Image (spheres, rainbow, N blue to C red):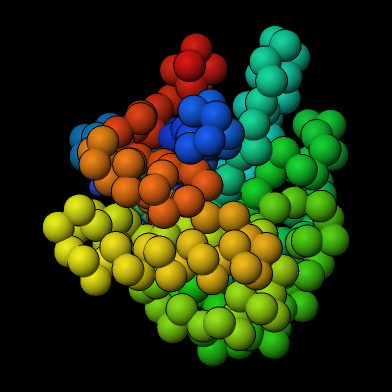
Length: 242
Ligand code: C2E
Ligand code: CA
Ligand code: CA
């Protein structure tokens, strides 16, 4: 609660690169908690707690607002800003306020909705797909992009992909990590890309760290990569310079 009140939350941005053009085609907003003694606390360590104590909606709204304000600053400086992806917790996805929060943040920074993309993990959909479907359709109607995050780690349900209004799939890091050594992972990447493309979805590979992983993703017609090979998550002023 103190982190929010004391303004200790920060948003970093990691670029996403298009494999056809080699250009930065997007970025992902990633939350950090700058604690005076603990340093930068990673989101895995405090988001589950924020969900537990009922803070995640406020934090999620803050991240959306921050991202929209940063985009507005960049546009005002004449920078051609690609789409910015913001992560959404499973609890936010069950709250009808999310679409309103989104519209409010976009309007507050005078942004068109296609500058924002929301990322939802596969596991966030489990349990209440009907309700998630209603909310995802409402978000889609606002005009933002929707990505299915960490694909391959949950049920990898084909019916989710067919039924829900996603336009991008992110292949989880765990498949990318061993893709050069493990033939089964290479086959999975190939199958995910082919399946997604046939359903009209684009594919992003997460956690690409080496040239070899990048080459394999390109050979298998993956659309975009994100990972340390190109750049780590960085503060707003650094991504602005990039
Ligand atoms: P995610 O959405 O899967 O984000 C990708 C994570 O992979 C990020 O970790 C990023 O720093 C890391 N990463 C990127 N490239 C590489 C790479 O080449 N190698 C390796 N080993 N890692 C890489 P991060 O920033 O620690 O975030 C962890 C998770 O926390 C995110 O996973 C996301 O689920 C969650 N998260 C982050 N920001 C937010 C937020 O604003 N709201 C919510 N609800 N969740 C967030
Ligand atoms: Ca994500
Ligand atoms: Ca992910």
